Amino acid sequence: MSEAQQDASPAWRRFVPWQGRATRVDVALMGAILGVVALGLALRPLKPFLVASHPVALAFLTGDLVAIGAAAAFARIGEAPLWLVIVAGAAGMVKFDWLTWWTGRQWGEGIIRMFTTSQRVLRFAARTTELPPWVLRVAVLLAVLPGVPTAVVYAMAGWARMRLSVFLLLDLAGAVLMTGLIAALGYWSGQRAVDIVLMIDRYASIISLSMIGLALLIPVTKRLIHRARSTR
Image 1 (spheres, rainbow, N blue to C red):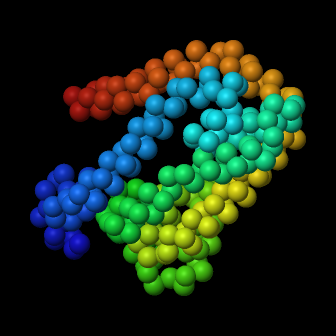
Image 2: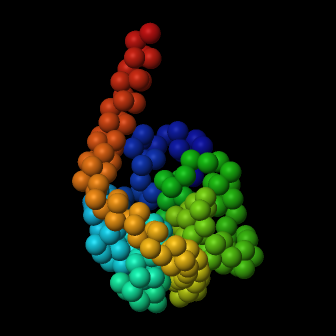
Image 3: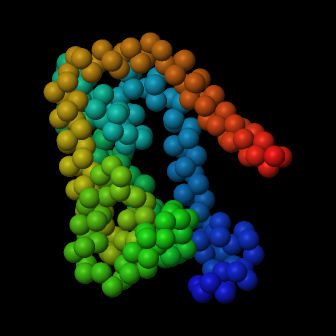
């Protein structure tokens, strides 16, 4: 879409990734993405409770690296098999990634613009279809690394028409490598890590309430600061 067309579009257009009227596929896909986001938000305050009592289940539900490390630490003291920790963690990390791949295939640049406002990333994403296939494959494999805009990379793979089977294999391989590394660190830590997790569990209620309080307080604080600056 050209800059002139963007300027002529209604303001709300920048909040949706599709062009023209939404199709049933657009609505269903957006609903699925919002559902995944809602699930993540619902699980967030439960993490301090589950990390000590059901760390393997938490690793599967969230794919969270802290949960994977905690589950591996419990595996060290015989509470769970290490292979199950790695399987649950890797599956938890990749279980919804195909949706992000699909958004790129369905909406292309539209979803990239929703994921990031970085002009450098947007310019790079626009050249996705011109890149050698191996470059994008390596990017998908390494997308789990900290600091990498994972969702953007997965959407780029869909936009570039990478086959779903290839994407899933690379995605799973990267997740297994990352999960194996974190699990190894947690397993090596053993009882020390378990003691920390149990201490977190002891104060889980305080931690959860604090997280909820911060989530509510931050936007209110930002609004008050903005209002104070505008009245000067």
